[in-house]
Image 1 (cartoon, rainbow, N blue to C red):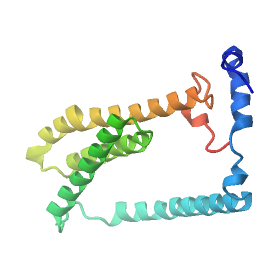
Image 2: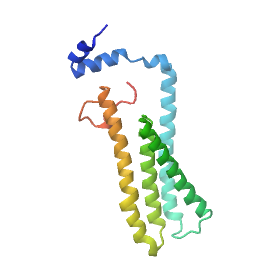
Image 3: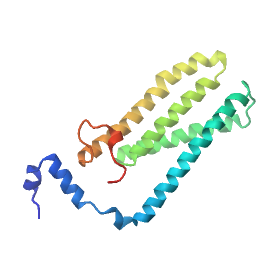
Image 4: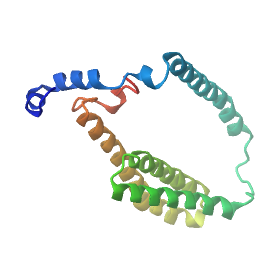
Length: 178
């Protein structure tokens, strides 16, 4: 048995090594062959979607008209804003409860706010453009930045605290699974 005093006396590298030795082996949760197959299928799907999206974007850039009469316009915007509202509410509740799932909902809410600002500005009538830009710059985008950077800070703090990440190491260096 390792005492609290012995753990306190360990260096960060020694603690990381101890944690690595104590964590449950991935093979106990999923057979390695199944894990490899799942990873391969997901990667093939993502690469296929990326390759398929490139000609689609080129086609849209050439084929779409400058102006278009949109159907279900109110339902589209009200529905999207309701989605943002739901993610904001869940993020607030998870923040109050101090739950890790907050990282996902805060990041998602931030991305939804960026999308909302983009589409608000891009679809605004010329007479409404300045108000829309002002709302995006003073409201939606700062809140989005706060939510996204907050989620990334929580992720960094959690990873650093669990000795998965060294202080100062970029988040993109964290392995998905050991």
